[in-house]
Amino acid sequence: MTVAVMLGASAQAQPIGGDRYAAGSAVAAIVKVPKPWYAPRIVVVGKMRDTIPQSQALPGLAFKAFSFAQADGHYGGIYLWKDLASARGWFTPGWFARVERERGAPGEVRFFEVLAAIDNTPGGTPADVDSSSVATLATSPVPAGSDRHQMARQFQSALVADRQIPGLMRRYFVVTDQGRFGHISQWRDMASAQQWFNGTKDSHARSPGSDATVEWFDTPILLPSSLLANQPQIPGL
Image (cartoon, rainbow, N blue to C red; front, side, top):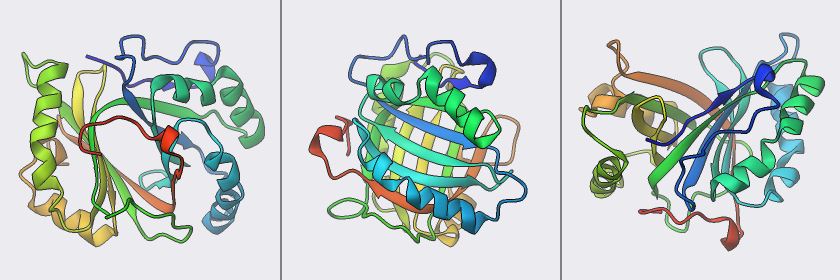
């Protein structure tokens, strides 16, 4: 099983996981930084917009959704990287040190290997600097006896059906080194996401229960890359 890595300030000097990744594996990353209590969200969104040119210039960054975690208000982003090398090139020990110095709190980064993905918008999800979209991370334990290749086949078999889900903009099918699998999904709006979660039979999307988990994010800015060189080679995308 390959990797999802969580690092904080205490791990700044350590390499950022992924030692067992296949060489060309695409990587998703979810970043969270505590939002200062005194900073209104609208101010933070404005600061996010200021960093758009920087994000557009990052080698290997295929897509970024600037985000706020609904559970705790922490801000950050949901990234899709072409490969692990590109992600490591950005999330260096210097990145962690800079975030803590400038934001007054350590950044948290979780990495996921992406085995398949879809974009349900013809021509690709467009940039949006005033989006009402939301994102979700849904995972559950990998079934006993399953391996990475079986997970990849399962994900690829779901591509056709998931292209028909109303309001689903993008989905990354992921595995983690904690023995979990699932998906990171970008939704047109909260209503679309709730409708699917309330009606789905997808085992790793059910929030009730001790094994399945769902995290929710507001995503006010969507930023696809226009560079062909930044696009990962993922089944379905």
